Image (cartoon, rainbow, N blue to C red; front, side, top):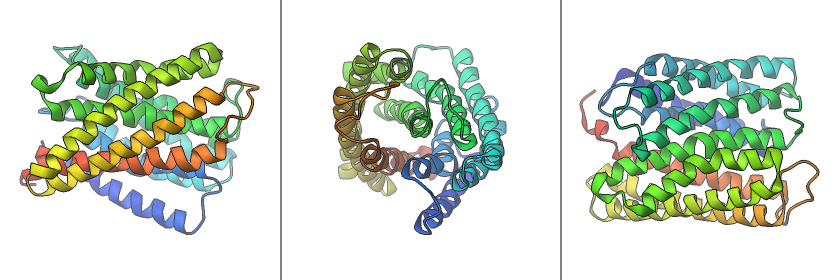
Length: 321
């Protein structure tokens, strides 16, 4: 279903990617975590949001899309500034925009006849988790501690809820749509359910107890590995037999799935040897290396390539504008 808002979101994603790339090439980002978080509001969220509508435009979609288009560049600018009141003022509209996105997810959830259709529930969960990332981004740009955590954990938590919180469930939901009802077997349903539940469980473990954090992180990684297998499998199917742009989309999904395997391997290694909880010792993989390796694999590999792959394969690309 091609609407003007979907086209605007995709054009904004392209413009945002160019702006982010130029800022990165010029060395404007002071550190890697903030650089990767800044990509989400201007590129990854518009791409993902444009893929959410199915046969009908969800209630509130136009309002949320307009807010994302206005607030995304503000969030990017906030990431270029040193933490303080000006950066916080630029990040605040992003929080308001994510609340509108979450409202779309809530309205979809309440209005759906089949509420437990797991792939649609995954899309809703991604939109509902998103404002948590915006709250932590605002705290990071304000330069304040949140719930007793300080940098770099504040920025990393903002990244977690933009990528693992929003992008991963949305991609898992889109994967379920592409599989179709007969193909959504136990592997998909299990992986999707684990991803939906694992994200808040990991956050709760980091906040409250290492005894929760480790099993939750391993559980979430297992769900992600399952999703990666299906992403690669469906991507290969499109690559080998799909029409036109769908083949390129299939290749991008294969690369996205392989990137997810790599990033989850690092996540398991990090979680099993260290912790993000307060007062924890340095894990086997330092935070800086996790930002460079795990962060880049998640942001530019899994998330960006997968969303581009689903965009190229989306039915509305075949419709006249």
